[in-house]
Amino acid sequence: MPLNKSCARTIDILELLSQAQEPLTLNQICEELSLPKSSAFEILNTLIQREAVVYANEQLKSLKLSMKIFRIGTSVLAQTDLYGTAHPMLVRLGKAVGETVYLAVENHGRITYLDKVENQQPIRATCVIGSSNYMHVTGLGKALLAAYPESRVRRIIGHGPLKAFTPQSIASPERLMRELEGVRQRGYAIDDRESMESVHCIAAPIRDHTGGAVAAISLAALYSRMTEEYAASLCGPLLDTALEISRQLGFTGDRLY
Image 1 (tube, one colour):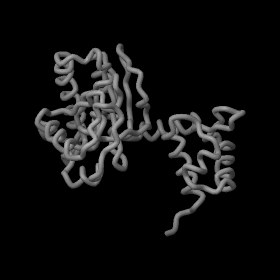
Image 2 (cartoon, one colour):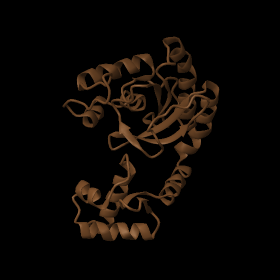
Image 3 (cartoon, helix red, strand yellow):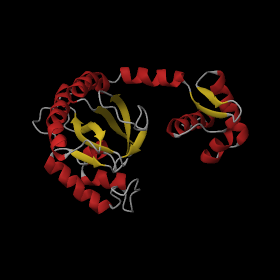
Image 4 (tube, helix red, strand yellow):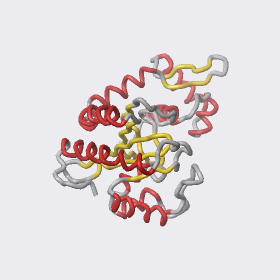
Protein backbone atom coordinates (compact mmCIF):
# COMPACT_ATOMS: atom_id res chain seq x y z
CA MET A 1 0.00 0.00 0.00
CA PRO A 2 1.47 3.40 -0.99
CA LEU A 3 2.28 5.87 1.78
CA ASN A 4 0.23 8.99 2.28
CA LYS A 5 2.68 11.72 1.25
CA SER A 6 1.34 14.41 3.61
CA CYS A 7 1.37 12.05 6.57
CA ALA A 8 4.92 10.91 5.80
CA ARG A 9 6.08 14.52 5.48
CA THR A 10 4.41 15.40 8.78
CA ILE A 11 6.31 12.65 10.56
CA ASP A 12 9.56 13.74 8.88
CA ILE A 13 9.03 17.29 10.16
CA LEU A 14 8.26 16.13 13.70
CA GLU A 15 11.34 13.89 13.73
CA LEU A 16 13.51 16.71 12.42
CA LEU A 17 12.29 19.12 15.09
CA SER A 18 12.81 16.48 17.78
CA GLN A 19 16.46 16.01 16.76
CA ALA A 20 17.32 19.66 16.12
CA GLN A 21 19.61 21.37 18.64
CA GLU A 22 17.68 24.63 18.24
CA PRO A 23 14.34 25.83 16.79
CA LEU A 24 14.07 25.78 12.99
CA THR A 25 12.48 28.15 10.50
CA LEU A 26 10.28 27.11 7.58
CA ASN A 27 13.17 27.65 5.17
CA GLN A 28 15.51 25.50 7.26
CA ILE A 29 12.95 22.69 7.45
CA CYS A 30 12.36 22.80 3.70
CA GLU A 31 16.09 22.79 2.98
CA GLU A 32 16.82 19.95 5.40
CA LEU A 33 14.00 17.72 4.13
CA SER A 34 13.95 18.89 0.50
CA LEU A 35 10.27 19.84 0.80
CA PRO A 36 8.30 22.28 -1.34
CA LYS A 37 7.69 25.40 0.75
CA SER A 38 3.95 25.40 0.03
CA SER A 39 3.53 21.82 1.29
CA ALA A 40 5.66 22.39 4.39
CA PHE A 41 3.77 25.59 5.19
CA GLU A 42 0.39 23.80 5.09
CA ILE A 43 1.63 20.98 7.31
CA LEU A 44 3.26 23.33 9.82
CA ASN A 45 0.20 25.55 9.93
CA THR A 46 -1.92 22.51 10.80
CA LEU A 47 0.56 21.39 13.45
CA ILE A 48 0.52 24.88 14.98
CA GLN A 49 -3.28 24.98 14.95
CA ARG A 50 -3.38 21.55 16.66
CA GLU A 51 -0.78 22.76 19.19
CA ALA A 52 1.78 20.11 18.26
CA VAL A 53 4.30 22.76 17.18
CA VAL A 54 4.77 26.26 18.60
CA TYR A 55 6.80 29.34 17.75
CA ALA A 56 10.02 29.61 19.71
CA ASN A 57 10.49 33.13 18.37
CA GLU A 58 7.56 34.98 16.80
CA GLN A 59 9.77 37.47 14.97
CA LEU A 60 12.10 34.89 13.46
CA LYS A 61 9.20 32.45 12.93
CA SER A 62 11.35 29.67 14.34
CA LEU A 63 9.53 26.53 15.46
CA LYS A 64 9.86 23.82 18.08
CA LEU A 65 7.82 20.91 19.38
CA SER A 66 5.19 21.70 21.99
CA MET A 67 4.52 20.19 25.39
CA LYS A 68 1.62 18.34 23.76
CA ILE A 69 4.13 16.18 21.92
CA PHE A 70 6.01 15.64 25.17
CA ARG A 71 2.81 14.46 26.86
CA ILE A 72 2.16 12.03 24.00
CA GLY A 73 5.68 10.67 24.27
CA THR A 74 5.41 10.35 28.04
CA SER A 75 2.21 8.35 27.69
CA VAL A 76 4.03 5.94 25.36
CA LEU A 77 6.78 5.50 27.94
CA ALA A 78 4.22 4.82 30.65
CA GLN A 79 2.79 1.99 28.55
CA THR A 80 6.20 0.40 27.93
CA ASP A 81 6.98 -2.63 30.13
CA LEU A 82 10.70 -1.86 30.00
CA TYR A 83 10.26 1.68 31.28
CA GLY A 84 7.78 0.70 33.98
CA THR A 85 9.99 -2.13 35.16
CA ALA A 86 13.26 -0.21 35.09
CA HIS A 87 12.28 3.21 36.42
CA PRO A 88 11.93 2.43 40.15
CA MET A 89 15.22 0.52 40.07
CA LEU A 90 16.96 3.41 38.33
CA VAL A 91 15.66 5.77 41.01
CA ARG A 92 16.99 3.43 43.71
CA LEU A 93 20.38 3.13 41.96
CA GLY A 94 20.66 6.88 41.55
CA LYS A 95 19.91 7.52 45.20
CA ALA A 96 22.41 4.88 46.28
CA VAL A 97 25.35 6.29 44.29
CA GLY A 98 24.32 9.94 43.89
CA GLU A 99 25.01 10.09 40.15
CA THR A 100 22.91 10.53 37.01
CA VAL A 101 21.35 7.35 35.64
CA TYR A 102 20.23 6.78 32.03
CA LEU A 103 18.12 4.15 30.29
CA ALA A 104 18.34 3.81 26.51
CA VAL A 105 17.42 1.51 23.63
CA GLU A 106 18.73 1.12 20.11
CA ASN A 107 16.65 2.76 17.41
CA HIS A 108 17.80 2.37 13.79
CA GLY A 109 21.47 2.14 14.70
CA ARG A 110 21.49 4.91 17.30
CA ILE A 111 20.54 5.00 20.96
CA THR A 112 17.40 6.75 22.13
CA TYR A 113 17.17 7.87 25.76
CA LEU A 114 14.04 6.56 27.51
CA ASP A 115 14.69 7.65 31.08
CA LYS A 116 17.00 9.89 33.09
CA VAL A 117 17.28 10.13 36.87
CA GLU A 118 19.34 13.00 38.30
CA ASN A 119 20.60 12.99 41.87
CA GLN A 120 22.99 14.82 44.20
CA GLN A 121 25.60 15.26 41.48
CA PRO A 122 23.66 16.24 38.33
CA ILE A 123 25.72 16.73 35.19
CA ARG A 124 25.06 19.30 32.55
CA ALA A 125 24.46 17.22 29.43
CA THR A 126 22.40 17.35 26.25
CA CYS A 127 21.05 13.83 26.77
CA VAL A 128 17.35 14.45 27.29
CA ILE A 129 14.56 11.90 27.17
CA GLY A 130 13.62 11.16 23.57
CA SER A 131 16.89 12.42 22.09
CA SER A 132 19.32 10.15 20.26
CA ASN A 133 23.07 9.69 20.05
CA TYR A 134 25.68 7.64 18.21
CA MET A 135 26.34 4.21 19.66
CA HIS A 136 30.12 4.10 19.26
CA VAL A 137 30.79 7.13 21.47
CA THR A 138 28.47 6.27 24.37
CA GLY A 139 28.73 3.72 27.14
CA LEU A 140 25.09 2.82 26.53
CA GLY A 141 25.69 2.19 22.85
CA LYS A 142 28.84 0.18 23.39
CA ALA A 143 27.12 -1.91 26.08
CA LEU A 144 24.50 -2.87 23.49
CA LEU A 145 26.94 -3.36 20.60
CA ALA A 146 29.04 -5.70 22.73
CA ALA A 147 25.96 -7.86 23.26
CA TYR A 148 25.12 -8.06 19.55
CA PRO A 149 26.42 -10.57 16.99
CA GLU A 150 29.32 -9.19 14.94
CA SER A 151 27.20 -9.14 11.77
CA ARG A 152 24.69 -6.80 13.42
CA VAL A 153 27.46 -4.57 14.76
CA ARG A 154 28.99 -4.29 11.28
CA ARG A 155 25.63 -3.30 9.80
CA ILE A 156 25.30 -0.53 12.37
CA ILE A 157 28.81 0.94 12.28
CA GLY A 158 29.67 0.30 8.63
CA HIS A 159 33.24 -0.01 7.35
CA GLY A 160 34.31 3.62 6.97
CA PRO A 161 35.67 6.03 9.57
CA LEU A 162 33.34 6.71 12.49
CA LYS A 163 32.33 10.23 13.49
CA ALA A 164 34.54 11.66 16.24
CA PHE A 165 33.14 14.12 18.77
CA THR A 166 36.17 14.53 21.06
CA PRO A 167 39.86 13.58 20.85
CA GLN A 168 38.97 10.46 22.85
CA SER A 169 36.30 9.24 20.39
CA ILE A 170 36.93 5.91 18.68
CA ALA A 171 36.90 6.63 14.94
CA SER A 172 38.12 3.29 13.60
CA PRO A 173 35.67 0.37 13.18
CA GLU A 174 38.44 -2.14 13.90
CA ARG A 175 39.48 -0.33 17.06
CA LEU A 176 35.83 -0.28 18.13
CA MET A 177 35.56 -4.03 17.58
CA ARG A 178 38.57 -4.52 19.89
CA GLU A 179 36.95 -2.23 22.43
CA LEU A 180 33.75 -4.29 22.34
CA GLU A 181 35.73 -7.43 23.09
CA GLY A 182 37.14 -5.60 26.09
CA VAL A 183 33.60 -4.73 27.18
CA ARG A 184 32.64 -8.41 27.12
CA GLN A 185 35.67 -9.41 29.16
CA ARG A 186 35.28 -6.53 31.61
CA GLY A 187 31.52 -6.96 31.98
CA TYR A 188 30.59 -3.33 31.39
CA ALA A 189 31.18 -0.54 28.86
CA ILE A 190 33.02 2.75 29.34
CA ASP A 191 32.56 6.14 27.71
CA ASP A 192 35.78 7.92 28.63
CA ARG A 193 34.94 11.47 27.45
CA GLU A 194 34.17 10.11 23.98
CA SER A 195 30.85 11.92 23.56
CA MET A 196 31.45 14.92 25.83
CA GLU A 197 34.90 15.96 27.08
CA SER A 198 33.73 16.52 30.65
CA VAL A 199 31.69 13.33 31.16
CA HIS A 200 32.70 9.76 32.00
CA CYS A 201 30.11 6.94 31.91
CA ILE A 202 29.95 3.26 32.70
CA ALA A 203 27.12 1.16 31.24
CA ALA A 204 25.67 -2.34 31.16
CA PRO A 205 23.11 -4.09 28.93
CA ILE A 206 19.62 -5.24 29.88
CA ARG A 207 18.49 -8.61 28.51
CA ASP A 208 14.97 -10.02 28.24
CA HIS A 209 13.50 -13.53 28.38
CA THR A 210 15.05 -14.43 25.01
CA GLY A 211 18.53 -13.54 26.26
CA GLY A 212 18.78 -10.70 23.75
CA ALA A 213 19.98 -7.24 24.75
CA VAL A 214 16.98 -4.90 24.59
CA ALA A 215 18.31 -1.82 26.42
CA ALA A 216 21.19 -0.49 28.48
CA ILE A 217 21.62 1.58 31.62
CA SER A 218 24.50 3.88 32.55
CA LEU A 219 25.92 5.95 35.36
CA ALA A 220 27.32 9.29 34.24
CA ALA A 221 29.62 11.53 36.27
CA LEU A 222 31.96 14.44 35.68
CA TYR A 223 35.35 13.19 34.53
CA SER A 224 37.03 15.27 37.23
CA ARG A 225 35.33 13.09 39.88
CA MET A 226 35.67 9.72 38.15
CA THR A 227 38.87 8.35 39.61
CA GLU A 228 39.74 4.71 38.95
CA GLU A 229 38.76 3.79 42.49
CA TYR A 230 35.46 5.66 42.31
CA ALA A 231 34.57 4.07 38.96
CA ALA A 232 35.29 0.63 40.42
CA SER A 233 32.94 1.35 43.34
CA LEU A 234 30.10 2.17 40.91
CA CYS A 235 30.41 -0.99 38.83
CA GLY A 236 28.86 -3.34 41.39
CA PRO A 237 25.64 -1.33 41.92
CA LEU A 238 25.33 -0.73 38.15
CA LEU A 239 25.72 -4.40 37.23
CA ASP A 240 23.44 -5.56 40.04
CA THR A 241 20.71 -3.19 38.85
CA ALA A 242 21.10 -4.18 35.18
CA LEU A 243 20.85 -7.86 36.11
CA GLU A 244 17.85 -7.24 38.37
CA ILE A 245 15.97 -5.41 35.61
CA SER A 246 16.91 -8.19 33.17
CA ARG A 247 15.50 -10.83 35.50
CA GLN A 248 12.29 -8.86 35.85
CA LEU A 249 12.05 -9.10 32.05
CA GLY A 250 12.53 -12.88 32.16
CA PHE A 251 16.29 -13.25 31.74
CA THR A 252 17.53 -16.38 33.50
CA GLY A 253 21.30 -16.02 33.13
CA ASP A 254 23.78 -15.10 35.84
CA ARG A 255 25.97 -12.82 33.71
CA LEU A 256 25.14 -10.08 31.22
CA TYR A 257 28.07 -11.05 28.95
